[in-house]
Amino acid sequence: MGYQMWYEMKIWVDADACPLAIKEILFRVSKRTGVMLTLVANQTIRVPTLPCIKFLRVASGFDVADNEIVKLLSTGDLVITGDIPLAAMVLAKGGHAINPRGELYTADTIKARLQMRDFMDTLRASGIDTGGPAAESRSDHRNFANQLDNFLTRHAKNA
Image (tube, rainbow, N blue to C red):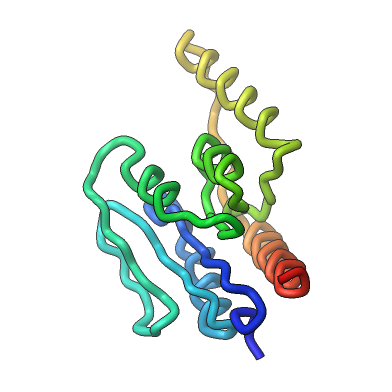
């Protein structure tokens, strides 16, 4: 039995920057569980031809995909994103968010993440090279898969 039988949540993906390995994990989970998966991007992305997986193309532009996800999101839905402001909007609307490295954003952690993001933006604006995140690793993929599985298990039991 898939999780979908107990819980009607949907998974939304901020797909423009989502790593291919994470998309593949999501495709397998959606196929196995029947949870509706929608990838939102401003460029065409190939998705498996399954009734539980959809692709939504949006116009190019700053935050267009983010705004569409927030508009379509229902309370309890899950969003996959590395975009901290989008994660904050998702949480404010009653959704859940996990980043592609497997971090579950929560009301307790999102404020600190926003503050750190703003601080790093300030440093970059003043000319300081802050570098970037480390390249994704297999460990990140495992962390993501484990966090997603734990999330779906918890929410299937609570539905």
